[in-house]
Image (cartoon, rainbow, N blue to C red; front, side, top):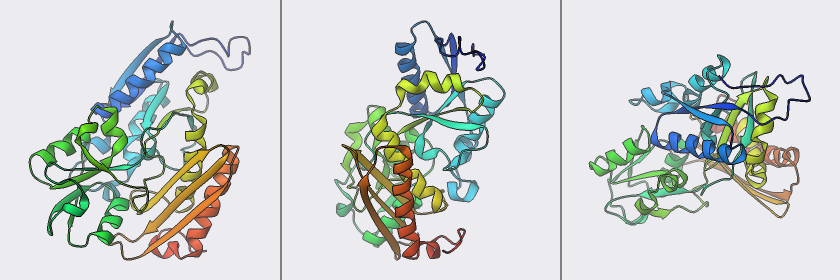
Length: 326
């Protein structure tokens, strides 16, 4: 286990870590992400022994049902959180869009790293774009958010669920089970598969999920030293953007069961955020856009809250029965 200093000792609290263990899913993309964090930590702390604990989560094991039917994206993090609790690991690396909007008691989202391309990607072996797909073509996606936009824009296409890690999904496409699939561009780029992207989809109307493209690092609240050691890896523009996005999602009960999108960009102290809530058939949508000065996480969350309230005022609660109408 890691050499964690006693947080009550100010003289040792800022010492460099001697050993850190990273909990990660074992998919190729998840391991790439963990290895990337490991390498960043090694550059910061050359004397630190950084290890990776690979794990299989329930989300990886249940592949025959949609996430919205079996418990949502939290299935990808529970086992990793258990490894933090029982001392097998010090930090867990996640794709931030998989991290529940409300952190469990005792856990912190301690670091948000610089974001990769947040857009959705159109991947096909035979067609250059969604517009080129013929009637009846099968498009695979794991996301109700993507499904709602596709059904609204292309009612002549057949939208089918697509589960599994990135390699599994690509394999299903290559075997001809789908004519096209929609994936996060970030994962493809991180694994050197950018050449498989036929087109990156525009933010309007294909607004990403909250946190898409960003890496989040989770730790136990009782280990503040680890949060301190991770601090240099935080990326302020990404942190502020995802804070606004996650606030929107939190207010609207964001989960795999909700076709909800939220994407923010922070530049020169100004933030722009676009968010929508839709019905799964794409026939109803509430869209809100927010702009304003942001210099702190609190201000980013306030802008996200305003956007969420705008959506609720438009009737978003009617599209999300599980949250109270306001």
